[in-house]
Image 1 (cartoon, one colour):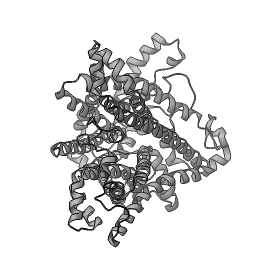
Image 2 (cartoon, chains in turn cyan, purple):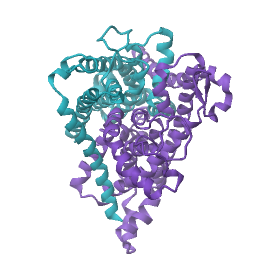
Image 3 (cartoon, helix red, strand yellow):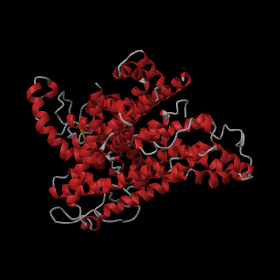
Image 4 (cartoon, one colour):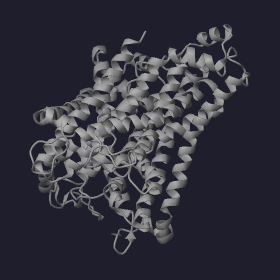
Length: 265
Length: 349
């Protein structure tokens, strides 16, 4: 029976190895410099790449961060520093619920509040959808990081006569900055791979960046479209795109792990 | 930290979904919150700047609450064309006709439940076994690495697992698995029909792959939270290691394990991209596991960008509302179970 347990754990690791292995093997085979620097070509034409989509993902990450990071960080500060216990547990509970909402429902919500009134798919609405996904992650990780700062620092700040908000901004947050930054990086790794909210907010675009109020392509979205298409050369591009995406996501996750291991005292 | 120094589950459950902060120590909110420490200003902030700043943070925290309420309100409003036309029969009808504007959710709901069930049936034994291995049996040099690897599986974006599923798993399911099952067990209605490859079986396997990391991580924390005194007492009575696990450890953390499974279920219900790519997108109620189908999420993802008209879009939004309500309920139940595990067990120690 205990041997079965080991086998089960081994199975989990095996699946990971299989998936990553296939992506690396297939992705590297079709990955070349053209892929990163050229725009998509029509079906049947050789070459072509996902430059616009990679750019699109970066733009969407920046947009989502601009909308979501302030809200998340300030909510985290509220939960850790200023909230009464009852308010804190209520808001914490709501943040956890928001974190559990399926990303497709978030996409539908963003469609309803942004795409419909604006009568256009846009990068902005996709940024809002991704920001909604980011906010609870950043809020909770910021809160936990701020809680880890020992109370002695707060007391020392008060003893020096610093006002409370100055103490938070100047003393507590820098003390928790590692945890906050790793939380932000994890959130970014999460939304880099999100596709479902983008399907009907960003829509995808055959052209490059046309402005925040126009549709925009993104890497996971393009992988999805290419994978579902019937063309083998598009399938190859999907594998290469998956390789780029997974390098990005796993790279951030491993970096986060390494940072939090290093800072562990 | 509770008395045993174990990570607390209420945040562990959350962080396992996104990984990475495992090495950071957890602190019991009741002991560390500055609001309760008398040294921090007791009561209201006094200075003008303090009041502005704390109100600012309050506003942003209320944004979170507002977003959640916004979900409820907006989804309901946009689903009105469908709700007013179909009423409750929407949940029981199987038609999906954009031309005649007849829509029904039943095959989507059935598909969601069936694929999640298959996924859990496959994933729960594997996750539980892996969690037991990671806590009880693994040598210390292996624990960290194996946990890290399993959590890396959770970090892989869903569309990539769908890509892998579509090009690697589906052919495997089509040729060896479904043909074998069809020939050997084809008398059961579960295994009848042509082996398409895409369908509920492939979708179930993909879902299992996606929820294994979550269930493993939360179960591992639940099992780790069992105090050593329980294990030592069993061993003093002469139990073998497996008997110790089965009779002392697992029953102790039962609610945590159930919470883990329910969290996994919540994730499985909302999974969109990987399922859309391997489930085949056919909208009919069939008993066979080989047949293609649809889940609520895959239906929304496939049709939303082409939907026109108030009733069509309203039906899709109503599907989203159903999914939202169900995942909301399941997440609340899961968190209550996991919190109860920590609240009940701490005083005993």
